[in-house]
Length: 432
Image (cartoon, rainbow, N blue to C red; front, side):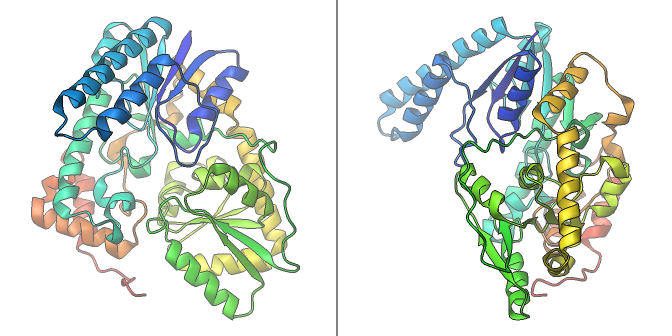
């Protein structure tokens, strides 16, 4: 058996998944076609992939008036992509796709299925989450219109149906799987593979005496509530709390790791639908506790048993200031939480362990307690949006496109709940 991981990197997930397969002695190819700004490293390339990237870059940079040259680059890109696909078909038995990637916009899935290749799709958030509850798309500063949202929701549903038709295994989280119709494997039980190497990190510099050092590194500042996190920390500073706040935005991952080594704890985000996403996972491997805000606490407890929930300080967005205060002043709690987080990820989420979970799925050992029915989803708040904004967007989508625009007709109970949620009163106002 040889595994092909295609075609993009998401927060180091696939780089580390390949490391795990390598540790297990499983032949695995990872081709990263993206130019990731955070430089997670470890990507593997080949001649065909480099040629595709080169032709794509030339195609996009060639002006439209130079039609013949643009057609040349389009043809070269497609020929290289076809040769690349044939090479991958000949060499591999299992194909793991991330973030809705494929060779030819899902048309290749038919061929993979005909040739009896095993197809696995792993979802990370915005690739399956309904746009109307996705802060990466509908946060107020993004400028997306309701018409854009309705169209993207329709397109999202169509692409997910294609994937569901051909994929042997789908891995996702209930809090972002509203548009799916097939049962899927719970991603939190499969795990987030991560490994930390101190070889690239610099020696930590001493923190200012008697100060508690807090790190925040948002990929989407508005969707992750960065402005409110800053305000909470400033209020605590004015009250006299000994805080040193460090914020990193848009820097290579190695710079984030350097600061992780130095900090006492992190504030991950304000509107998360999972207790431990990528940044909190990185922190956990270093024994650093994480504060995570979000509306999904009740749903997480409904989805998972306590021993399967990653240890973070997961709180309601309105409680973020109190959470920062607690971790600042209660050193015993802070150290205990960091230790628990480290123990959890080192037991469950090492590259080797996560790759073992993938092998179990590939070999057909589907544990029933790992599977989830999308029709049972009841979570409404989404990710990256305060409650008032989520309700505002959903309400406007319904008013412009009807409840059908939610693309939830296969789940009438969930559709009804979204309508009721959209028109219910909101405790938090935009200015509170």
